[in-house]
Every structure is written in C-alpha cells, then in structure tokens.
Image (cartoon, rainbow, N blue to C red; front, side, top):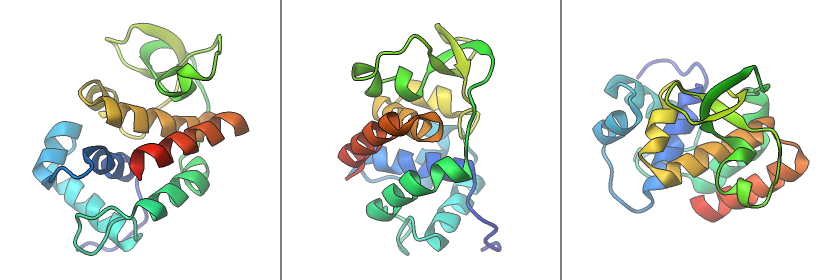
Length: 170
C-alpha cells in the first residue's frame, strides 16, 4: 500500500457511490466502471479512506457516521468551491433534487457538461467523470448534489443538505 498523502476529491465520490449502493454487494471493478475511474485509483482511494477511518478495515463497510461528520465539517473547507462563469451543464447543489423542492432561486448552479440542458454558474465537480456517472444513478446524483450544496451553500442550504444526506446515507 502506498504512503497515505491525504484524501483526494474523488475519494468522496467513491464513498458516496458505495453509500448509494446501500446493502447491494459491490466490487471495486463495478465502482470503476460506473464512475469512469480506473481500477487502480479505486483501490488506492479505498485504502486512503480506510486510513482516514471512513471505510472499515474490511474495505467494504462504510463508516456512515464518520463520513457524515467529515462531509458536514470538513468538505466545505477541504474542497471549497466558488461559483464560476455561466455555462451549460447539469444542475447541482440547491438547483438539483432534492433541495430544489425546498429552495427557490433564480440562479442555477451546474456542473459544466456539453450535453447539459441548463445554463447556470459553473461548479467544478469533485471528479470530471461525476456528471456522466450521475446521469446513470439518481441516488448517487442526489448525494453528489447535496455535497455541492455543502461546498457552496449558505447556512440554510447546508442544514437542509445535511438533513437530506443523513436521511439517504443512514
């Protein structure tokens, strides 16, 4: 195993993909295929997450409470994001489900994506392959959008996002 040099943004996406699978058994090669991330990077990510105590020693069991604590208290500081230029893309943060059901806003936040159908301020995803992976898995999409709300939202959006994450992950 390589030396642990800290978490990487794609580690969060991989952990949330595992969370989206719930009790469904998974293999690393399945995560690689579904996320568009190499098998080697999935393996290294799982090892980093194990050292960070976000996944158990068996490398299969998600440490849900610890993950939620990290998302709430660490994610906005470790992977902050400022909305950027107006681009076409896929909605995220408060512009996507489930937050768009409770928050009305004239400004949309989007992941830049050429085949997207909404124009809004750009939010860089935690990994470039996230938009494509989210189009194939609606629960994973919700989890990633909620994380973006933690990264760019105000206090109210962050509280709603954490409540929704707890409901979906636990």
